[in-house]
Length: 87
Image (cartoon, rainbow, N blue to C red; front, side, top):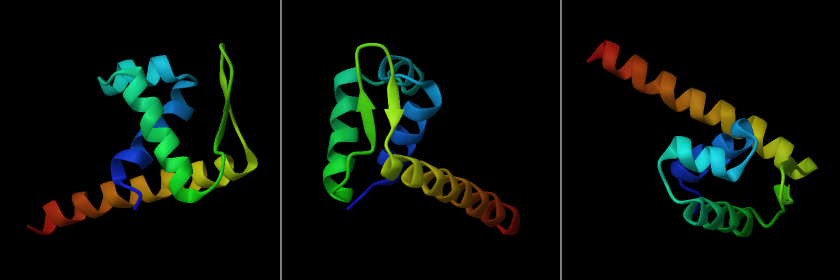
């Protein structure tokens, strides 16, 4: 099952443009971040990112996943905000 953390990690990697910058921002080891993205790709059974020494690039499947993942994370944040407001 995909975790919210994996959604966050994936979006951060794409937004940061690299694993190293994303790992710094997330305060985790780059190897742990890479492992989480690999597990995510295994779970969705699709290659989401192509990687080389200098940059990452979204695959077509990765682009779809990225757009949906951003929306899901935004929906979660809005749900928390509304719940706090009611509470």
